[in-house]
Image 1 (cartoon, rainbow, N blue to C red):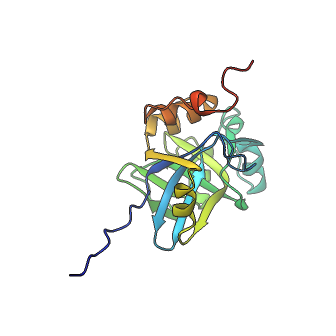
Image 2 (image 1 turned 90 degrees about the vertical axis):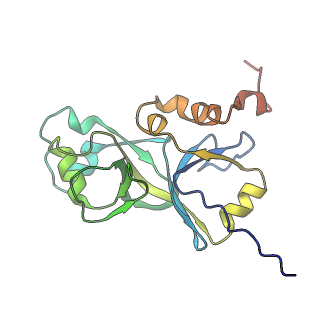
Length: 192
């Protein structure tokens, strides 16, 4: 009798939550939203790593003038160590069609084209969005290996954490979706 392996569990539309022991400079205490995961690998954007870059810096670079002065002060995130010169916008799905979008769920898309930045600059973009420079990527089997090595926790993603939870609370809030207090897992817990 032949025993067939069950299909692998892919983690698209999940959070990867760094374990406290993960000390990689790119991912320590990070929450990464997995946009795509299949047999070829995985791709996601880190949602809790603000950069020193503001939206106005990017708009100046692509020669787009914002509709108001308040628009340009939005924080841009370090999305991951791959293609750090390229922008990715994680956003709620809208009626608008963008030139380069990946539909992740019926509510969330990832767009990497300038047309969405122009819409955001004109205050006509998606209501909820997060702009990153770069992304996180894993080759075939790499993420599965890291998961087996207990470097990450994972759970289904939550839109509220992506778009509405304060940046400094996203790591702990994502883990709490699993009922896990990361401070209790840390070697440094209880130290002032």
